[in-house]
Image 1 (cartoon, rainbow, N blue to C red):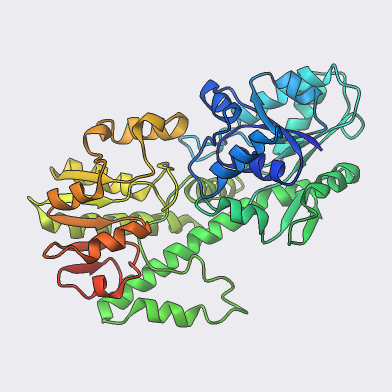
Image 2: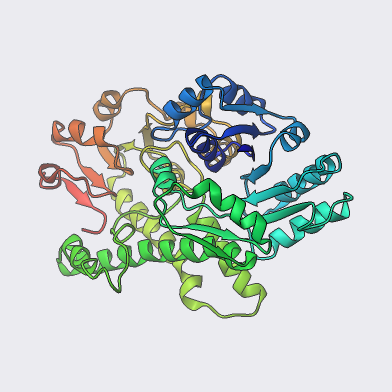
Amino acid sequence: MNISIFGLGYVGCVSLGCLAKNGHTIIGVDVSRIKIDQINSGKATIIEKEIDEIISEQHKNNRISATSDFKKAILETEISIVAVGTPSTAQGHLNLDYIFKVAENFAEALKEKNEFHIIAIRSTILPGTCDKFTSIIEENSNKKRDVDFAVVDNPEFLREGTAVEDYFNPPLTLIGAENKEAANKLAELYKTLPAEIYITGTRTAEIMKYVNNTYHALKISFANEIGNICKALGIDSYEVMDIFVKDRQLNISPYYFKPGFAYGGSCLPKDLKALQTLAHDNYVKVPVIENVDKTNQLQIERAIEYISGFKGKKLGFLGLSFKAGTDDLRNSPAVTLIEALLGKGFEIKIFDKNVQLARLTGTNKEYIDEKIPHLTKLLVAEINELIEESDVLIVTNNEKEFESHLKNTHNKPVIDFVRLRDETIRQKQGYYGINW
């Protein structure tokens, strides 16, 4: 099929590459000239395992291209996927301006199109957004919903760091639609994937990402509280949680049930806050959900309190992004922690091979400019330089290379937020696990 994708960030770039790999011809649409040029040069717009190779390969196969010309992209394709950002407002609501601007673009373009067009929204949106998106198109064009076009919701379940693997091995494929023809045609895109396809009402699909991500956020905070209690009692929290997740019938998934540092990234904090705000707006009391982010903040405060005991020592941070294998700095708890410690007068250096200042654009750059505007002075290019010049080493994500270096490092305290896999490091004098 000929498909256009609006937005070339994480979801858009991964979808662009993976759909092309499945044999489709894809046009990416974005307002960023940098991202357009990257795709048209066969380069990915993000750092993510495998996506560089996929984009390069599919560019050589002439299956992918990018443009800022939304009208051309819509007129030349039969399905459009919307993957633009939906950031939080200061009040916790979703900023849907980008989504509705795209709807206006569709209204303009569809005036000139006679064929039935399907628009699938993969961005995380609140219930009722698809209906409003549809209304904007109807009100600004001569087209009718379910006659000339259809809008469906197709939420993604991709984890940063494993997004390509998740795309090709999803837990399920969810399509929310009121138009059966549109739902069935969109389902054709995913028929080769090893997962059941669920077709449901639009509003049901729209809320699922919030339900999922709020639960994932809850799992992380729950594991951290258990870890903190176990540490106080001298109990191995990892043994406790390893036993806990043996129950695959009731406790479901072991993925997030790991004691450690605070959660972060672009999804869990945003979607948790959105669900809290949604409940508040509808006068529904949700005391457990309301306190999940408070537990997460307490985990950061716990780290600040402990590290503050090393007053006068030079701190070396191994990792800045919220998760290994990604350059995403949005809501990274490491950024929040470093910001607080700088305020306390600590001298800090940071090593993260995935974070390159020259490549920081868009939301990532805005976030760092606000939080740590002098980041360039803190980053070092080589891990050995950081280890040599630091008195205390703090591990905030689990890049594999960190262990090989720490194994040969002696006489320096190591503060571990991720539970390093190498037991010999964990047994060293001066080693500290945040809650094990």
